[in-house]
Image (cartoon, rainbow, N blue to C red):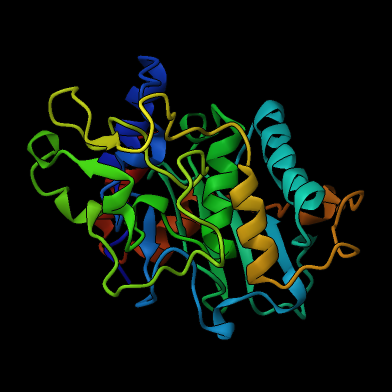
Length: 287
């Protein structure tokens, strides 16, 4: 496990929301692997190659255990509906027989996810409200769970972007590590400035100056969190061997059955990750 949920990241996301600092994305405030990956797997980038990391038949059982407002719930629903509309991925309410599943939660520790199907319960954390300002943040974190990492870490990225390390926060340089090897695992899709998995231009900046500069186009917008790019959709279709007739468009899961009623979900989540009571208390005190 890469570290543990952090209260200081939660405070940064709260400040992001309160100060409307929307020149970057909230998941770029994290101090996890690549900013928002809590449990990285030793897999190549941009997408996981091993079949064992994929969800069988593209079906992802899920539950919602976070305390979200009605508007935030609608944002989550919209994100999931985007998968059903554009890909063959299908999110279905978790049943007791589902041992591997995604649990959407809201602990005050930022925006983060693991990558691909990791086995058992795996959390997609969407801190309220900062991680749900844009539907694209939810799509981004769920796309990690589907099996994808960040676009700017692809092996061939130096042909498309220049990393301005002099502007990167000290200690955050590792978030810009390029995948080793001479070939990309982009599943047949070329480098995509418009990917919902791309960092923004000022990600992890120490001085407000750009850390990522596009090389192929001076007009390229990077770091968007509105919706899938066409390349994002194609990569998912290629990874999961979707056929033209297998889109999940029109599928509407019963969200009511996916919502778990837990008396003290924050304490339960904290207890899972923070056996040290002093660490747990710090997280609790952020709410």
